[in-house]
Length: 384
Image (cartoon, rainbow, N blue to C red; front, side, top):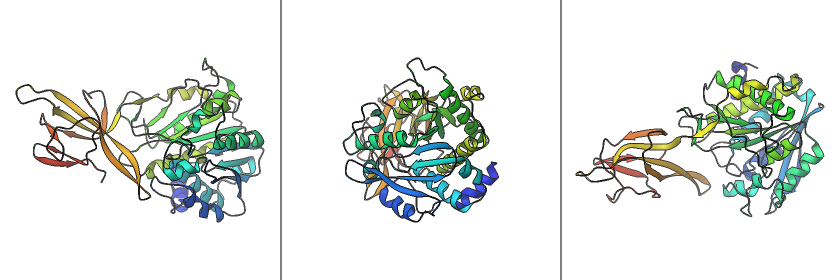
């Protein structure tokens, strides 16, 4: 599958009813209802607040793949990409081998309460990705029951990551990240992990041709409470997908395209290849993520006086807030320090001026500021 084909397929089949960051059950239910007969849609359980959790199953092959998205309700980019994939498979005949070689079950939104509230947690304020062992939550039980009954050979664990991540200790944004999770405390490179690593290496190979040096992998410290680690420990190759940031793409529409590609390439590779894990070593060429980005950095700020200047940098992070069913990005003064080892997605230079708020008061950590005043000039911190 070459980039030109993937681009053509995406442009033809992108689901236009899903966009921006706020995606919940009311958005996807009409799309599920109109899926063609090749898809079987079932309700496989309910959330804390009684919302249905849906699964979409398709394909007829012996290789079984389980995918789930929005375990964290505010991580919606992968859900958008899933519906782009549904449209592509229904309307294009270029991936018929995938459908004949694989049986695929997708849970588009595992945490519908969190999705509607636009929060990471479920309605009981529990992180479902720390509940894989205890299984205290209904959503966790739904996923485990699906895993047990479907008996997948592969799992895709679909998430979204914050704008802070860099691909290694560089100024390259981690636009997409992956992980083949550990399955034991010693983080052994087991056969199950090697299979996941080989698939990730193929996904990285494609992405490097388009977003070079913008792919990372996560730290593989073992935590049996995490779903990926749990399923990996059960010898099912499990791949973590993380949809990250790209340039000014706070709506995550560009990243959506790269996730879409990765889903299709990953599933097609499984369908057409006897994945043994022999190609796992290329996985270790992918840099481990670091946290080196702020949304905005204001450099060379005088936090002292004219007589005794104290030159610092200001790091601003956007806080995502749901207001009137729309996600707004509120600029928060996160850090005032020497940030010379960090990078901003946008940067200003104060040239040793003070940075003041709307009341002409020196900026303070923790404040929310839509704009700042530098040398009598107003600078907006809001997204444009």
